[in-house]
Image (cartoon, rainbow, N blue to C red; front, side, top):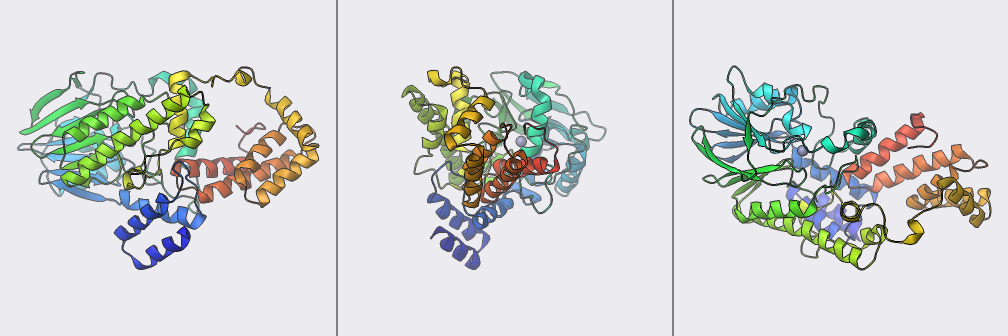
Length: 466
Ligand SMILES: [Zn+2]
């Protein structure tokens, strides 16, 4: 029934109505489930593409946001004798394109650059905006702390990053990255980085730059070094990556340290309290109009808090992360909001992150204090199935019935067995991953499934398939 409704919507309607149809559709899904039929998944991801259509959006008489020039947004605030740039994209190539697009609106010199946080897609292109001038560069005291704690595992994080963003997918497999387009120019990463010259203290900062009143508010969330920027006269708010049009990435599957979810909710709540006329996200289109902007921020803050509180209730009821991840849902009045659809972050990933962030890896069940070594467990599962041959058969049946998750789990057991057909297990895993990918509208999951399948197929992954 959903599918029929969906295709009807798309045949007859404009882009905007199409989006409404998506909302009606997703309203019928269990929250946290980002699997739908393949046609619908693709349509949803294609519709989300509008969120990063390349162009400059005028968000106030003197404020312009360049969307779709790379993964993130960059903005220009025009003052009396100069301009202020908020975030600088990933590298000088994409930043130069945005700077050129901005010049249609102002060619005044750059007086200041502001980094909302230290993620590479916001700080790498500064040099492309400035000529001979020496602008002040604003960042928080803790600038750069975001990824510093887990540098030791960079080798594996890089592999997982490639998968999450689908960096090596073929053109026919590529969709987008949930809150960013795919296929961005990344080879010049960080080459235009200009280091901060002004530290915003933990109490924040109110000042005037090029005649523009501007406020810096510390706002930890996606990173601990994040801040949001407020123009009190224009009532424009730059949210950085604590807000964009998707359920937030409270955990990134490329691997991250715990992102303090309560802080994130609180920071977005503070933004909502300012009642902005426009909210400019770190990624995706600005949301314009006082009511729409304020409501979006209020909802976002509440959604994050709700997922946190439900998870905590589950924990205190003695439940483990697997169970809670399947139970937590966005509240009824929030689940259809366009900026809370799980294109980038997902509720179940968030639940698991909160669980391990608050309690560490142990789920409290003594069975898991010292679980069996995987190879031994695989042998016992095979015995339970009536032998390796039967286990293989059940794996094949699971694949044929498109029970992809079960096919994956059985193939993971089979790969450990000395008498198992590891080639067959590998093939089943590849097909099951592609089956899951086709149904996914969460971009990181989809990209990860596809990338991993390709790595398995090419023989790039080791025998153990990690
Ligand atoms: Zn970003």
